[in-house]
Length: 197
Image (cartoon, rainbow, N blue to C red; front, side, top):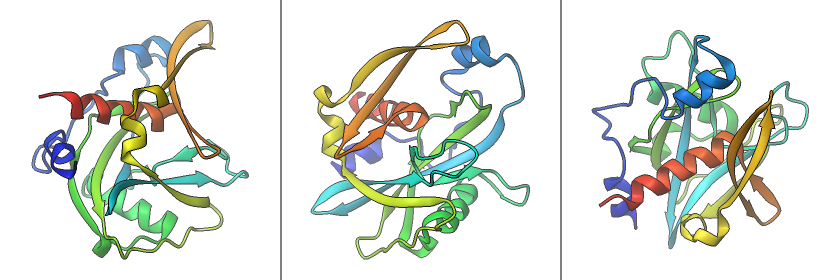
């Protein structure tokens, strides 16, 4: 499975460039405002089975409070690239030292309703890695088997209204966690890329 995953990624030598794959939809919803750069770490741990790493954001955050997310965040002016951003933010949020992370490649850029353009960095996480969530940002770290997302019946589709526009949305539910929004869309991009020959 790890080989299939790796083949589906953009190579580290060819990081994706904006705009995001959903640029047309976002432009219709929020206009041509400049998208702020961000990156997330799509971490995969190969512990008997492939397991993906997620966080639950604390309830008091000003944006996306209580939501399930990949660790990551806004690019810092000092960051060399999206990989640097993803590793820095992940260490800040869940205490994952870069020594435990082996970057594998990239997924396609994704734009959010809040005006970000996210670069997802896929990486292998050491089996021995332990997480120390920053209590002011992360309420919980949990793992989900990749196989759960590969089961078509676990993908739920629905429509939501945003400023008079009907948006097609996706989500997953795993052991009491609702995985939706940008995180679910990034997962679907991964699944689509894995299905390509």
